[in-house]
Image 1 (cartoon, rainbow, N blue to C red):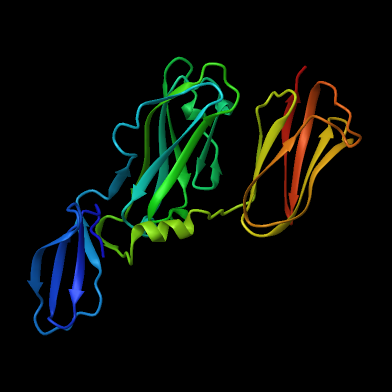
Image 2 (image 1 turned 90 degrees about the horizontal axis):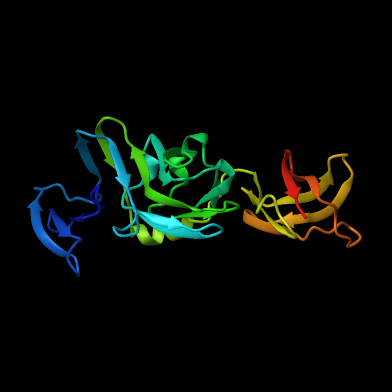
Length: 284
């Protein structure tokens, strides 16, 4: 198993009734201590940490922040979680940004899950902080990729700080971790937990726009475009799709291949019992 900070690992040696402590900061990891356990024949091991503080912040590698994102640009960061987030009671993605002047201007993706920035991040000409609630069970051990991009602003913005915060129960907390964190993370990075129609970007748009949506399981999906009178303009998707994140592009044409007029249009997604509608604006 690994220590809370990932700097040490512990190996039980059944044949010799000992415990080896390895320093993972060395290359390769080296044994720094061997503890005699007596006549117990250890066959497994857990790590119990009695912590004064039960809150941990994990950030990208130093030097990746602050980071300016130009209008229409994006940036991805890798945040390593050396402990199992499923033991946590709470998890948040913390974003501190400067000059995010419109809540619809920025979009966030954690692994393959689309997230929305809450109003607290909106601080024209100043600094705003967002705390986006996460499900600890959806976070993999090891590598977590956060992508933030500008989807319609004119000035861009700067990400000042970025972190995943995990809160564990007070007192003694049991951390269980089996195997290599990197390989565990690779198998879970595609997890999508819920149906979501994330809307389109850019918005307003001309001549085309991209629509993001996601499925927690294989489903029959329809993505349709209507005008404000309820008339069907275009069917973009109508079929069975696998679980995961998906995109579809609307080129501003109707079912007959003609360009639609400037105005407001509605994008509707149906998948099983799920239905949601987003507003889109075509400009000329």
